[in-house]
Length: 105
Ligand SMILES: [Zn+2]
Image 1 (tube, rainbow, N blue to C red):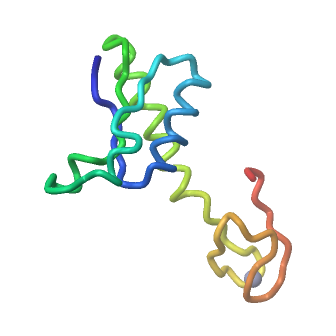
Image 2: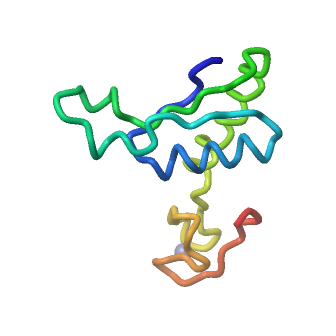
């Protein structure tokens, strides 16, 4: 078993777990509810931890995680009209209201 991902935000850890499971990886989430009982522990010790059950999957699973993390950054789109950069959640340019040309939603 190998630790593949940890994040202070439980939702992020859950998202990554779901994506990995959708890709067929066996994963286990630890510390899911530990943060409420952190007490004297360093906060990082209580972050939800995503463990990969099969060590041989590590490289492939890591690539999947990289893809998710990169997508979050690359999801921004640039307006073809005014070249303003918009967040992926916008369907229209916030500045000039031109419709988004992004293909990925
Ligand atoms: Zn625009």
